[in-house]
Amino acid sequence: MKFWLEDSPGKTFHTKLLNKLITDIKDGRLASDSMLPGSRSLAKQLGVNRKTVQLVYEELESQGWLVTKPRCGTFISNILPENELSDKNKQLINNAQKTKAPSKLVENLYQDALSTSTTMATANDGIPDTRLIPYEILARAYRRACISLSRHSSLGYGDPRGTIELRDSIQKMLSNDRFMNCSSEEICIVRGSQMGIYLASRVLDPSKGIIVMERMYYPPARAAFESNGFKVLACELDHNGLSIIALEKILSLHEVVGIYTTPHHQYPTTVCLPMERRLDLLKLSKLHNFVIIEDDYDHEFHYETKPIPPLASLPNSENVVHIGSMSKVFAPGLRLGYVAAHKKFIERAAQEIVLIDRQGNTITEHVLSDLMESGEVKRHIRKTRKQYESRRNFAAREFKRVFGKNISFTLPTGGMALWIDISKTIKGKSIKNLHHKDSTLSTLYNDESTDPTHIRFGFGAISEKEITRSIENLSVILKGS
Image 1 (tube, one colour):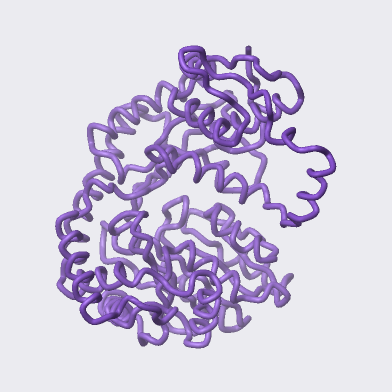
Image 2 (cartoon, one colour):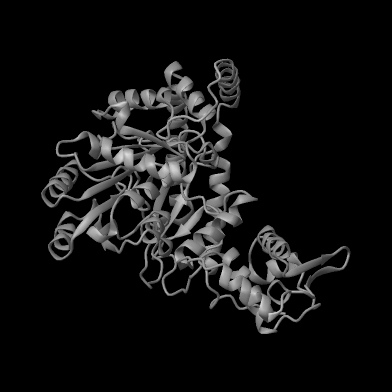
């Protein structure tokens, strides 16, 4: 049995194979009781990791499409999910579940999240190394917080903006490290930067104008804006990041309610927006009265010089919504971030939080505040910043050693990823998918139906030995594509 995945919807292999198998079952190509190829043989046929095929099989079995028979193999189920009910009962259920259909982008993001939830991340696009987390320090802080909060009966409902302790700690950090003049009343705690982006998309009004994003963009951010009714337009980028000239042209043609940007290290291209452009962007924001949603997702990891101050700390920054996260400092699983903006904006965001989950995690917020006040967070940042800088430099040397002049890149001033030009390496070759856990193709970050020219290679989560193996493996994949 052969499988053709090129026409299957989805940007990842996991999604493509999942959708293809379901389609083949519905169309009758895979009949009930027929046996599927073993995970090892199918993985070999498709040129992917066996674990990926196993995950697809397991997911389809949980949904009722497949059945595993011990010592026999994996078979198409006799009773398929869509065939269990009569037509009459199906119609009753369909009428009862009048849900909105997700966009293709949301569906792809969801399937990618499912595929990474049970294994190591398959898309290392610049995530931190969770092996560097100070587990013992965290454990002691959690113990202190649990004892203190229980003794003072402080584990009930609280402020939807977050505990005052953590908001005070973040206010001090933003004031001392990022030169931002804001009060604790102008800060809201969220479950990571993505929640902050989604809240911004809920608070802003799509009837008042469009959202502008950089042409190469962060897909979950775009999905959040589109899900809340916004039309999104792309603004051109150059070697210095967001083009102010291109933005001025958009402003002359459209009513803009906000612009989402990643100025510190542009995602995905890693470029740092120069000070002159930052000041010009802020002037435009004030002149045209649009909101700037500044996603400062990795401010702590800047290696060359001191980080350029964020937009929210500069003149004319009254319209800036500053979003930050502790995910890069510790791990994505910690789920803590913050939004700093005008008090009225924060109040509207907090009102949305009340409707979602009432408030955040009180214990974790007290733990982080404790670690910030004691200086442990700063010590951890200083330690890991040196390690990530070393890994960046090592990865750059290894790319030059393995690929030579067949690739090119500009060494980023910070962050945990490299933006590599692979156009010479793949010249004349067709490459639509890249099955490499530490690299993602440039086509993932835009809507243009063009061939990929770059990859984003994440070096933060892997050691030097792992970097070498990964780059050498990438060379084999690209040369054979």
